[in-house]
Length: 432
Image: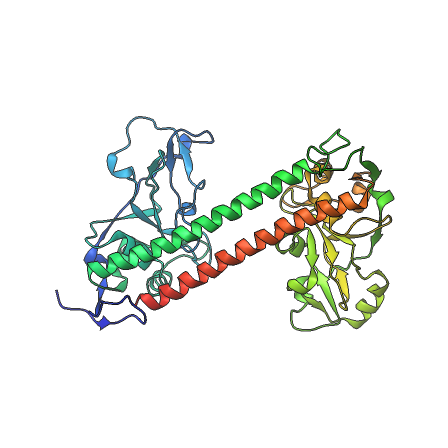
């Protein structure tokens, strides 16, 4: 076999000087095809057998739990279609138009489940080097760009064993491969620790939202700060709020560069915003239409106002954000939102968490209309009930508690993003 092109990475560990050699993947490994498991044996209940799918791989690579199909094992499945713990597989089919998952790898976990190899995945076999290195090599742009460029299909993107094996990438000696694999495995371990901590913080917040506001039929919450007692007030939504105007401008009619007023779209509430919105900390589009801004100025949002999303593709309809820390900006409520202003005084940050808790949001579930897209209306929520303690100090403590939790969640997410960027930077510089 003739020697391929030689090259060096930008950054490498001390003690390694040999050049890396370019090879086709087919020169160093092979791919095993999967099996077309029959959908009639797929089921909802866990059976101990799970057919993995392209969805079992995270965007960026790595195993994603819960995306396979539970399988009723009828008769015998050939051993070659049963994954072993530690096997590396890649996606051969991708439903995203940009093929952002095509060819990406994952490692089969050792967790007691028997994982089955379906036909839309390729199992990497017969590699003589370090499998840890190979896993991260398959996440580099050098490899990924070739897989995407050679893919076929429009709505669904496909690759093939021959196309994968024809991809050309650079390899160091096995000792350096092992060092690189070990290094990036440690980065991923750190990422997992931070992700686990983030998950626990989010679970804590969800649990406390259920315990620090009254459940259905109750007048006091399950958990309460020391020193507070007595029943909470219960008032209709229409007694607590007055409605504000919103506009129906689409995203195409807004811009992110400049304008006369900032605009909150329902998608911002559903995806980007927490229960309490610091408008200076998020990016929202502007309204440049001077006539529209002048018309809406009397109903421009103020600190303490609440904006609810009145439409969504799931039961997150009614998710809201409370406006705080608004200074000189003109802020308007936009498409598919319901904006309200408190008629009675509430402590800052209280309403955002109350109205997103099960205490309030469960009341919206029977009011939602639609099939693919669910919605609620101003008239349907006027008779829902708002619960609150009389003492403003208790409201303040509740709002601050959840706001502090959100701050910890934000810091944890920033740490994850920092590590992900670090990893991506080193993948670029430590591989050719």
